Image (cartoon, rainbow, N blue to C red):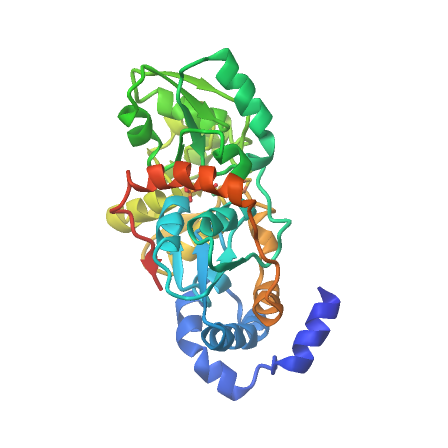
Length: 349
Ligand code: 13P
Ligand code: SF4
C-alpha cells in the first residue's frame, strides 16, 4: 500500500488542514473517545476525500458492524449485521457498491445486484467459516442425508450457497430452521451457530466442523474470569461462540442484536464477547455505558482501511464477480432467506 499511498497523496489533498478539521469536526465529536487526536489527523483527510469521491462516482458504502470506527462512523452510508447489509444491497440506487466487510459479504451484494459494480477494498478479506467448506463437501452431505434440507450460513462462498436450499445469518437462523418443513435440518458450516440453534429447537440439526476463528477461542473459563474481574458487568456474546460460552453469558445475538440490546438495556458496564470494533462503534452512540474489553480482532475485517477504500474508489478495484450460472442458484438461496426477514433494516448513517 506504500506505492498506493504515494499515488493517493499526489492525486488528493491528504493534509490535515484547518478546513479538513472543520469539515470533519462533527464526525470526530462522535468518535473522539475512541480515536486519539494524533490518529484523527491521519484519518480526517481520507474521510473527507472518500465522502467527496463516493458522491462523484455514484457509489454507496455498505459497512459491517465489525469495521473500524473511522469507517463505521466516518464514511459508511449504511451499517448493519450480515442480514441487514444483504437486505440493504437489494435497495441501493447507486451504480457502485463499496463493501467494507469480508469477501462473502461483497459476493452477496453482487448476487443481489448482478448489473451493478461491487468493489471490495481488499479481496484477501476472507473468513475462516467461508473457507471451511466446499460445494463438493455439501454434495457429499446431501448424499449421506438424502432429502434433508440444507441451511447455509451466509458466511460461505457463492459456490456453496448455490448447492444449498436456503441461507441464514445469526439473526434469523432459528426462524429459518423452524420455518422448514422437515424434522431434520443440515445447518452448515458453523458448528457453534448450529449447536446454539439446536438448543432452541426440537428439530434434529446436523452440522459441519467449521468455526469462526475469532469466536471459537472464547471459553467458559474466560467468562468466569470476566465475571470475577467485573462483578457488576453484563456479558453478551455472538452465537458463533461455543455453547458453553453462550450459556454463561447474559445475552446472545447477531452483531446488530447485541448493539440493540445495549441500546435498550443501557447497562452501566458491559463486555461484548465478539470482534473488538463492536464496542468502539456502539460506545459512540451509548453515552453512560462503559465498555470493558473481552474481545478478539478479526484479521480479515481489519484488512479494510480508509486508504484502501479511497484506493478502491480511485481505481475502481477490486471488482467482485460471480460466475452467472453459480450466481443464479446462489441468489435463490439468499433471496429465500431475505423473504424471512423483510423487517430487518440496516441503519442509515
Ligand atoms: P452478523 O453481523 O450477521 O452477526 O455476523 C457476524 C460475523 O461474523 C460476520 O462476519
Ligand atoms: Fe469470519 Fe469470524 Fe471474521 Fe466474521 S469474525 S469474518 S465469521 S472469521
